[in-house]
Structure formats: C-alpha cells, structure tokens
Image (cartoon, rainbow, N blue to C red):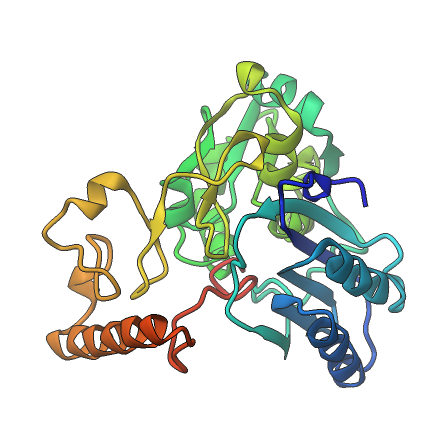
Amino acid sequence: MDSPCAAASAPLCVAALYRFTAFADCASLRDPLERVCREHGVRGTLLLAPEGINGTIAGSHEGIDMVINHVRALPDCANLDVKLSSASTMPFHRMKVRLKREIVTMGQPDIDPRASVGTYVEPHEWNDLISDPDTIVIDTRNAYEVAVGTFEGSIDPQTATFRDFPDWFRTERERLLGTGRQPKVAMFCTGGIRCEKSTAFLKQEGVEDVYHLKGGILKYLETVPEQTSLWRGECFVFDQRVTIGHGLAQGTYELCHACRRPVSAEDLASPLYEPGVSCPACYAERTDEQRASYRERHRQEALAAARGSAHVGAVHVEAADDRSA
C-alpha cells in the first residue's frame, strides 16, 4: 500500500476505513473478520451494519495489509475507502468487531448514500470551493472536535453527536440558505463517512448544490501543503494519538480519560484537570462519586503499568463509536 506508513521510521500503520454497501448477514462476517485481525496483531474497532463497514485499526504494515485485503474481499468492498497514517506506539488497547444498526449513526433510516450523495471535491480543489463567496461551509463533526481545529470560515453546528445534525439543519435551513437563489453547500468531516450521509440527507431535503471533501480532513492534511492550507488548528482522531496536524504528524493535545475529549496545554494547567479523573470540559458533568471511581481506576491503571501489564478496566478510545457518528 502506498501510504505514510511505508516509511521505515513508522513502526505502526493506522488505517481509517469505511464502505457503504448492503450486507445481508453481518453476523456471519464478524468472526472471520475479528479472527484475521487477531491473527495479525491488529487492534482497534470495526463496525458492521446492514449499510456497510466503518472503523479504525492499527498494526504492522503487513498486518494492516492482510486485514484490508480481507475486507476488500467482502461483498462490494473492492473499492473500500482507506486512509493511512502512522503511529510510533499502538494507539488502541484491544480489537473489537461490533454489530450496529448504522456504521455512522444519524438516525435517519431513509438515508442511503449509495443512492444519492453530494459531489466529491478533491483536496487540491477544496480551497477554491470554500473560498467562493457563494459557498457556505459546514463542519459536520461534533463540537469538541471543531474546538480543536477546523477550516477557516466554516460553520460549527455545535452538535454533541452526529444524530443531532438533521434537527440542526432543519432548524437553521432558512437562515443558512435563504429564500432566493441557494448557495452551494460544502461539508467536511474527519475521514469522509459523515459527509457521505450528510450530503445524502441534504439532497433528500431538496438541496441540490451539495459538495463534500473527498477523503475528509485526513486526506487534506496529508496532501495539501501547510503553506497553502486553509485548515486552522489540529484534527481530533479517535485513538490514543488524540490529534494530528499537517502531514498527519501527531498533534499536541492529550486525552481526558474520563470523558475522552481532547485536552490542550491550557486545560492541563486548569485546577479542574486531574489525570484520569476530570478536565475543564467534563468536571461539571460528573459527580464526586464518579470522580472518586475514576480516581481509583486511574490508580489501578498506574499500578498495572508499573507491573508491565494492562489493567482490565483501562479506558480506551473507540475508533468509530457514536461520538464519531
């Protein structure tokens, strides 16, 4: 595979992948897929649903090759969308293959990206589109992701999960699009999967001039030079790297293991931050009892690390859970 993982200095390869396709029997696909991951030391999370497959995994270059080849052999998955990056250490604690209703949860059962979707825009053409004054640019990610970084001039829906997006758009539609000649709508997300559904949703709502960034932010940061980039900040990713920047280099944020939100250097200096227990974003959302439980869990994890073993309750980031949905 031609990817940033190919560098000899990158011991591990991280693959973010998805494919919208019709799986008649997801359950029959689960065990063979999990088996090939475990046999080759690959970790992460893969979701299987009647609408396809989605997830992020990490492992050796050879291991990732084997898993991707296995997925490409599944029904209608030859054109699997894969974005590759590198990691110096394993960003996942375990391997999970989960059965879900949707591979990215929007909660709109009539949306089918295979039937109707927006116009794909290559990363090298994206700047021109979003710089056009007749284009409105919408970030379809969750609010805590947008806070870390986004494209210059984009709209933040301030949604907690992707399932909030339809209600947000319906409420804001007139303000966004007006009543006269409609602007072009350009949308983006981390890897492209949320935009597949959001553009399909807008088209079903009668919006015709809809575009989305092919390969998502990850492909843009990989291929567009920083000198000409319109991206500002870093990009949150759903693994232990937390954020990445241009060239897919690991970013500067850490992870709050209580709420799994990104933690900046400023957050680390806050009196509300306690490793493994709380951060400024989640402190008010938790009770003293919950924080006491997190504190004990963090203590047990530290003891396990000192022994050189993994604590059974270690918190990990799901690669493609409902937070990315």
